[in-house]
Image (cartoon, rainbow over all chains, first blue to last red; front, side):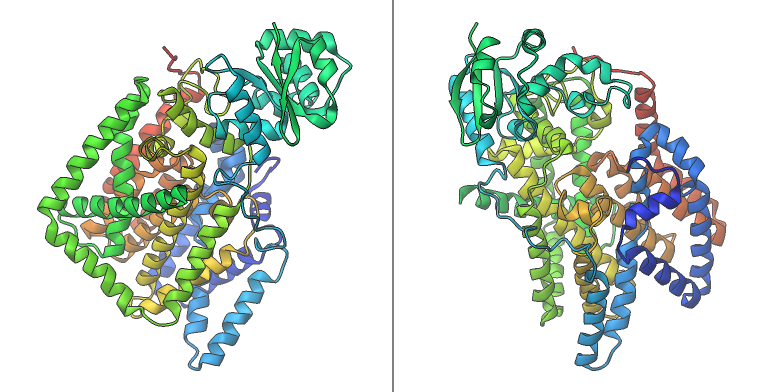
Length: 264
Length: 353
């Protein structure tokens, strides 16, 4: 969770538009008011200690320095949000005597949590994978083309973003020519401190991702520096002539992508 | 059809392994635990032991196949010794499972089972693909392909200059690589279908066990509560929620942290609050703490924080110094990892040979 400056903001982002956090606090108050005396004392202690040690802005900054502020929201995982709501829900539903009463209360609970836009079950949320690898068929075709052609055990390949994410999940012998950080930071020269580091990879990203044809010298230099064996880009960019000029000829095409191999 | 069948077989075998490891630990330490608690304890004992075998080899940068052979030997010895010495316990464990299922017969049981299976299927069909996916599943694939552990960067395949202790301190993905090697399947299949399903099933088991503790008079209420949590999971879509990590990214160690390790810790705390002197409850607290980092590095600070707050709260009520001493020992493994990780973030590096 990035760009969060306070615990309150962290909770707001965590709960989003759902009703779960308010429902959780209602359940906490219920347990506190109607629970046993010893439990009440313990709950108060947990509440105060949680605020003292974890859920305050100073702790977020201090602990965040070691584990990363972006992951501080995982402390919220320690709150038994759903089990507590479910415990209260079970009491409410199962203590009805008649079946129709149980069904009505369950239906109301169901609507409370499924009524908004926060459901996972939406149109298009279930798509059966096209193959057992759960990867795009096109990426598999690209990997197969390289596997048939390669004369090196671990060739260096530059891919377009979508292909890069999936390629090594199918064929781990391929080595990325563009790093993850370069993909994330190359375009933010002002916003990110490391952007300058990725000038070389920027030319590769431009060619493979956006079909940029206006920087042949920078591209050739970058390809040489990274010792790239294959280039994979979208066929729609029509890069055949441009990449031939950089020393890479078309090897084969998958359904959507073209694979180029180094000629020298 | 072979791949799904193999995945199913591995899931069943892992379930049996957790049971056997649980019975082994139960017998060694003479613990009285229910079948659900035994399975839970077995899960943590399994990953804790795997970590003990794997971590020295990772830090020494030994080849991956040495870990494979070492774990085969350890698991074989443990399985055989439990089968030979604890036959009665094993029979009792199975009897407990079947008796529990029989007690719950009726409309609710198949409804909840169907719901949990639907969640497993839903998770398996999800095609979320992010940088983290390439990091984690890439690590599994790279380990098997290069026969090394964390020597090559998992996402890119480039040789690393030093061991990345952010990942290398937990052997969770090495265990996945072990499964890949044994089954001859790719990392994507093992992580997505096997580990993803294991995460959801273990989450269900823990919820049911929590439910039994909260509703000791009626197991059906516990079952209903389990079902209700799963229904709510399907409606809690924010990218930070444990539900998201259960339904979309259950195969990641983070998914296990949010949905197995922390709920298990919560269960252990509930038991401890109820009866602080019982050895079984301390054994559970220790097992979960000890194996929290082996399952997920995300547990590094969250689990000890939960433990310390829970024990201090109890101390304010009961003023027993003994529980603080025991708490210290439960938190010690994570403290060691934390110190190593702290030095790593301050520049302490183990260079790759």
